[in-house]
Length: 406
Image (cartoon, rainbow, N blue to C red; front, side, top):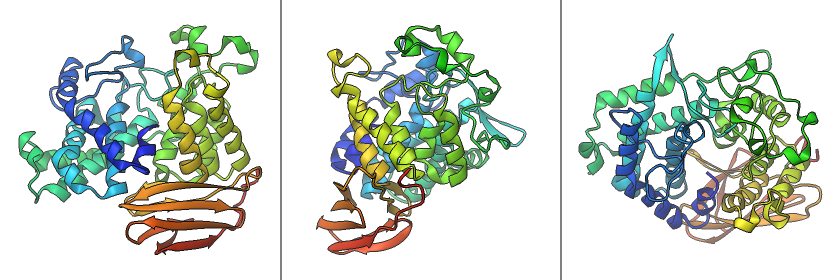
């Protein structure tokens, strides 16, 4: 979720190689699913080197079922960026179908909605919860695409369909579950609660915690943290970033403001996501502050861990904070989207991306965004939700969005 987004829009062949690692370890994921009681499907381990689970603490490890959705999301993003349907036919779709089976087995229908209980989301300060918003939303997306890919590939020579015994009735269950997935929402606050019980917990008073007691996981027992509204890193906020069309702008803003107050950023993976979502919501100067914190993780050894090596995933987060944050890049089924933002301190910035075999230079300046087709065929894309065709050079005036200077 942090490194592949870089490769997917710069050197997608590397993303394909990373996905092929998951394909090679699919038999281990099937074995892991059986160990956790699932009679069908594949469940990838939370932490692994060769394909088997290496995490010793299951509440913050094996219970993170969203790893299946993360992997499916990365495969779909690769397909959206490249249009490489052949790779899906040969390898990618099999991963998506086998991992989608886990949601059907782990979840259940209750009062007409599909619930997924006893999982851990990205925020490891809340473990073994019911209906984690991030997990449920990814499961919904995952199941939707599992059904969609079956329709795309069933008339082709897709060996996985017969090999894994995928059939129409199972695909119908994928669709039914996807449409019925329960997504927690609180009417009073206008936010998506992190899980069913999150808002019923008391808040920890962060003002009373000494700076030397961070990260909290080194000074507080996990059970104590689990009883409070406290976040180690983005969870619902990460969901709003990767699947922004699931909620309205106002709900995402409400959620951002709510979770910002209770997130400790005890993980190096945290600040970059808050930067991306601040930029998405037009809070550009706040986005810059979080971006600078991400950039300082190793430069200033913020977590006192650099002696053990750089925080590699954070490097991906820094990249995403510029390209997916300030640049507003999103890969969607309808196309490539950009929503450029520029902090007051910056005169301009630029980056290169690869989309459908076309290499594009994006330069964001004070009054305009300039896109240059460096190589490859002309492409259609969206800037601020307006469709354009990039033939050679495209210049789009930048009207300063509301809140950009904040």
